[in-house]
Length: 222
Ligand code: ADE
Image (tube, rainbow, N blue to C red):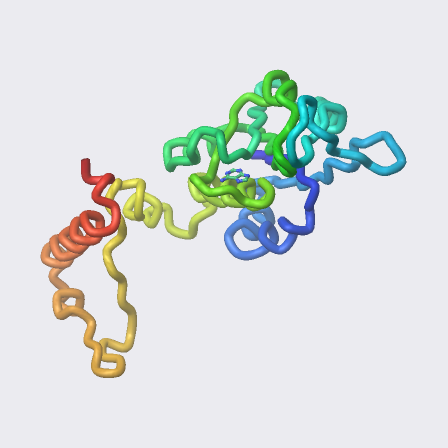
């Protein structure tokens, strides 16, 4: 799978993409990610990417020219061109899974007060939000989207199993985990986990999942 990211702030992604699971996934060629600076597609001497909105109002708007040029150069037949924006479709596990099955994604990170509507209509296939809050720019949102979908690419997570039992694939939140020592500062690990009785452990974990989900995310139980 290949992902091209268009942003005005490529350094925001450098460390993030080279560390941990995403770094290893790229080294293993499970995923190829290229980060591009939108300014590379500007033609004027000030490398202008934004301008004042027609009709007035505060803030600046990302211009058509550099974005059309960049996307038209990077796109491939059948690729999915995604604009990260707070007014997009909310990111969900189902959407992350669907996007992980694409061959090629082009991600556009917004900035300023928005982008020219003609970009959205002509060179964007899908708009995605990572949540109901507004970030200063979409670069972090692109990072979140990449991270969430990469976990669904076979081989990216160490153990395939951890994906199916984890929060949200099952619609229940996770059960509590413990590791050694069995007693730390007078706090003991629940007895059942030391029992070796796998049936009882499963039951306990499921009960804890239901308990946690009803207190933190009752909406998931409906
Ligand atoms: N850009 C700014 N805020 C965002 C959000 N919540 N999701 C996606 N892109 C964004």
